[in-house]
Amino acid sequence: MSTHRNREALAGWAFAAPALLVITLFFGVPVLAGLALSLTDFDIYALASLGNLRWQGWDNYVHVLTLPLFWQALGNTAYFVVLGVPLSLALSLGAAVLLQSRLVRFKPLLRTALFAPVVTTLVAVAVIWRYLFHVKYGLVNYALQGLGIDAIDWLGDPHWSMPTIIGFAAWKNFGGNMIIFIAALQAIPDDLYEAARLDGARAWAQFRHITLPSLAPTLLMVSILTTAGYFQLFAEPYVMTQGGPLQSTVSVLYLMYEEGFKWWNLGLASAVAFVLFLIIVGVTKGLIALQRRLTGAAA
Image (cartoon, rainbow, N blue to C red; front, side, top):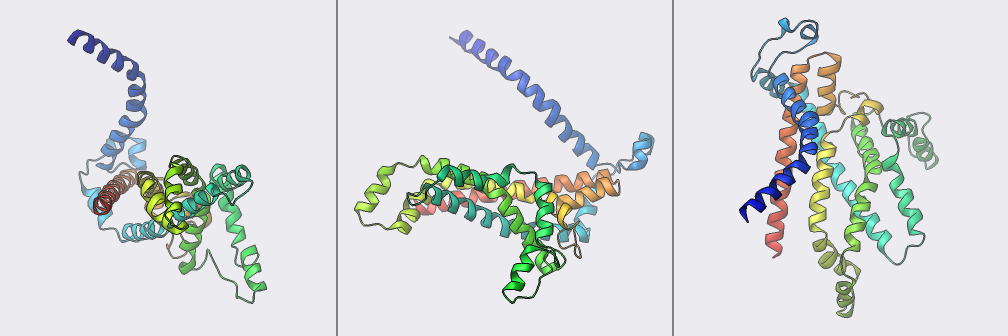
């Protein structure tokens, strides 16, 4: 019996070995190399000759944590996450519930239309949004002026630049989560809703006491994935605002890009990347703990 189990285990490892090898080569090795890079002063001079490379230890991390621009970038990123994640989840869940209701017709067409922004090229639609919100020629300000409202400098005013990017990101990304929620909603037994209707429960009560508890695992998964993705904000400010105005849209990832590929401080940029990784891990653990606490309180 033991020999048979050992053979099964060896066969399993043999089948998994190619995938594990690929993961090691294209994920494990680069991560370890990036970690080693973050402990050095690797820059453009080290690219010319490794003799110019010096060991920094934890100095890069200390420098990152004492850099005022890092904390501003972290604050901008947190602002983006705190507002953008709930907005994206609300849009995706609302659209999923609406498309699952019996009141909506042409569901396949609507699903395709709402999912379309997800598969569009981010840079292309970001450029389109930049022109839509142009202070002089944008259609948004043209519509506002038609209503008697003064034009707003959406991407040039520090008070409006990040909310504009948040709106764009929520529009661009909510369709993917919507599909996940639709699949989860279809897995909820109709008998639960039928029993609730017989007991006189209205739509809101059914949503609160049946839909949301049934979607709890899916909500947790989608929240974690969306939060991790939103912490990696880069392309939107890079295309739409270049980190401005007044650095109001500089994100942690944008700061990493500038340090690494504009100023060639690759060691410092790697340290920024690992600090962001630790922040994402901490937030993920917090979301899991919160979900467990809420589940325990509900039980």
